[in-house]
Image 1 (spheres, rainbow, N blue to C red):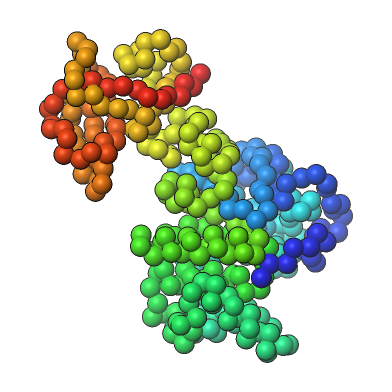
Image 2 (tube, rainbow, N blue to C red; image 1 turned 30 degrees about the vertical axis):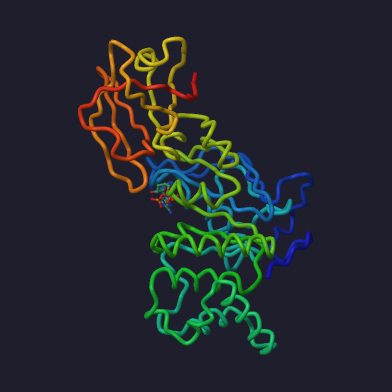
Length: 353
Ligand SMILES: Nc1ncnc2c1ncn2[C@@H]1O[C@H](COP(=O)(O)OP(=O)(O)OP(=O)(O)O)[C@@H](O)[C@H]1O
């Protein structure tokens, strides 16, 4: 579906020249403020590159600037400072074009605003294509519906579909014109857990088969860790981390990232001195699975099991000792009782200075 040429489409700024040696999508020193909302943090001096044919996920708390960043990449808003380049060319902003939005990209928004509720699935997707070649229009629509596994829903009205099915139509509608970049804002928001996995697998398959580049916004750590090739972590408009999910999860650059991805224990130096007296650092990150419970009490100041939360095949255990409280994972449910005293071993930690 995607067409991978290096020449600019008609989507370029006439005075611009193509810069060489940049990432497929290169964001440099990007800042955005909203004048009608002076207290809003917008985005502050963000720089990163996006690789072609990969899934990049932008994750952060609500209001951290995820959707703003996606809209800037697409060209629906213009930066106050910095620039965004796609294949070396500046992405035109809303004042550079009659219809904002880069021609080689498609944005699937959170609320399916794009779909015609009363038209059927086929027409919603086919209507993106011109009537100059009806056979080609038919084939492309069929391919797009097939790739999202919704060909069987062709005759159904959008109004009669589930949230997950609507999401599939919205993606098929975005892909039918063969964009090179697909931007998705919270794509799995309205999809329940069992359908989510299938949709994620379908998206991965499309990315691998046609070399599509995907940038998606999410606030769900399990989703981004499982699906993305690269992660961008946003907090209050600042880029707090960038890298592969494994790298960032196992070696979080800061406490915010660790809390967001792993619901980590973040200990102050004083708190940490109780557990890891040999470490001197401003903060110590300990993921819940980096703690091992030892039933034999080996110290004079043991931990007490305060709470045991049933999570299916594992338990989340809350431990406390003096002022310190820790969350850890127990993969052998029903082994411990509330109030039981235990020792713990910290298998791994990350010190932040
Ligand atoms: N058009 C706008 N005008 C004024 N303020 C805006 C506009 N768009 C976004 N903001 C503000 O910018 C900040 C970032 O918003 P944004 O929607 O990008 O965050 P987000 O991380 O996507 O949040 P959520 O997860 O809740 O969707 C917020 O304070 C928001 O109110």
